[in-house]
Length: 302
Length: 302
Image (tube, rainbow over all chains, first blue to last red; front, side):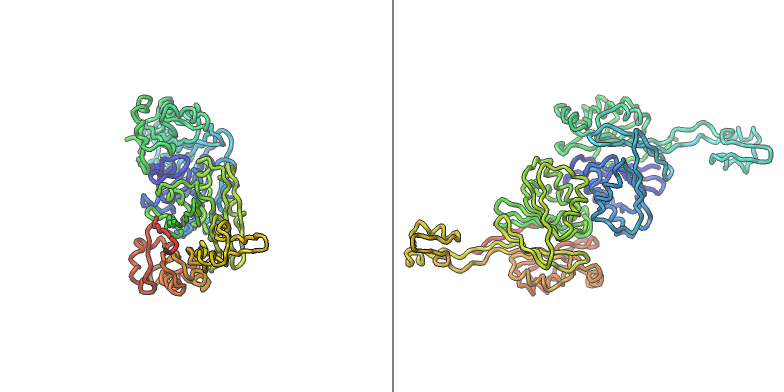
C-alpha cells in the first residue's frame, strides 16, 4: 500500500558506492520525496524510476547534502515534459535557497509552489496522507517528519440494521458523511467501529537524539533515523557536529516502541555500515542497517 | 607530462552508467577542472582522487549539466581542510551563478576568486600553461578552450661558444633572460634554436560546428569535442538545440588537422556511443568514442 524506498544511505558527500540519504514514499499514485542531495536523480534512475510522478518534495534542512540535487531533478522533470505543478515544503528559508539554486534552472514548464514552515511542529495534509514536521536539534534549523495514513473503523452492519438505517445511506455514512433524512439524522459513529491502526512512518536525520524524536516516532511501523557514526570514539564528533550515533538512534527507537528501525546517513568514513549491526541490535533488536535502495511495503494490518 | 582525464562523457543529465562531461587536466602538480556537473565529485572519487589539488576551474557555460556539481565540490574541498584559494574562470555571469549556488555553501575556509571574461576570446596564463577561451555558438553564451604549453628551442652550445658567451650566463639565457655584462649584451636568440612544438589540447562542447572551433583546434595533440547525437535523424535536434552531431565534430577535427579526436557529451538517448565509431571514423580516422574516465598523457615530442 505504501512503498518506502531509501534511495541512498550516505551523509555529507555522495560516494561511488553510496548515494546521499533521500527517501521516496509512494502511495496511491502519488510520490513524496524527502531530501534531494547531489546524485539523488541518478539513484532514482538506477531503480528505473522517472522523477515525473513526484508531486511533493520535503526538505529537512538546507545543508548541501540534502538539497544540492534539486536543480538537476527539476530540470529532469522539465526534460520529461512535465507540466503539473510541484509542491515543495521546507523550513523557513526555502524561498531563498530554492531561488539561489534555480539560477541554473530558471525556466521550467511547470509551477514550483514553495511552502515554508516554522515553529516546533507543522502539519501538512495532502494526497491522502498526513505529514508532520517536528523540529529537532541540529547545527541549523532542521525537522524530522512523520508520514501517517489514518484508517477508519470497520462498518458495523448489525448496528446499522439495529438502528434501522436505510441501506442507501450506508456507504455515505461509511465515508464519514452525516445524512439528514426527514426528521432523522444519521451520523457515522452509529455504524462505524473504533478507528483502526493506520500506517505510520518516521524519518529523521541530522540531529542530536532529543526526546521529541521518540515522542513523534511512537508506534511507527518503520522508523528511519540517522546513524552517522558507529565507532564509540566518534561520540564526541556526534556531539560537536550535532549528529547521532547508531546507538543513540537505536535507543530512540526503543523508547518510541517502533516496529522496525532503519539507520541511514552514514559518515563517509564508514565503509561497511553493517559491521555495527550486532552492537546496535543489543539496544534495539529490530534494526536494519540498510544498503542504498532498501525497500519496504507498509500495509494496514489484516 | 600533461595528464588528461575525461571524468564523464554524458550530456544533459547524469546517468547510472555515465557521468556528466567534465575534464581534468593535471600538469606539474597543478590540476585544472573544466566544467563540473552533478556527480563530478563522485566521478573524481571513483578514480581515487581528492578534489583538493584542483587550483583552477573553468566553465564553458552555465547550463546545469556543466555547473550543478560546484557547491558539492567546494564543500568537499572544505571538508578536506583546504585553505588555499581557488581560481574560477567563466563567461560573464559567473559571479551571479556562483553566488546563487553558494546559498548552500556560504562558508568556506578558503578564498574563491572569480574571474569573468567576455568577448570573442580571452587568454588566461596560469600555472605554466595558457588557456584560451573562444566563443562558440550555443543557445546561451558558451566558450571552448585550448590548453597550451609552449616549448622553447634547443640550447645551441656551438653558437654560445662561437659568440664567446661566458658559461656562467648560459642558463640565464636558456631561461629567456637578457644578460648585460659590461659593454656586452647577450640575448636568448643568440643561443636558442627556433621554438619547438609544445603541447596543445582543445576542449569544446555545447555548440554548433562553427569555423572558430577548427581554427582554434588547429594542430592539437588531442581535441575533445561534443558529439551529442549519432543518429542521422537527430540532425534537426542538433540544429534546434545548438549542439553537434558526431559527424560534424569529426569534420571539424579533420579541418583542424588535429592528431586525435575524442567525442563526448552524449545524449542520454544514446546507450552505447561506440556503435557510431565506424561512421565517424570515415570522416576522421583517429577518433575515439571514449568511456568515462578515458585518460591520455600528452608529452613533448622526443
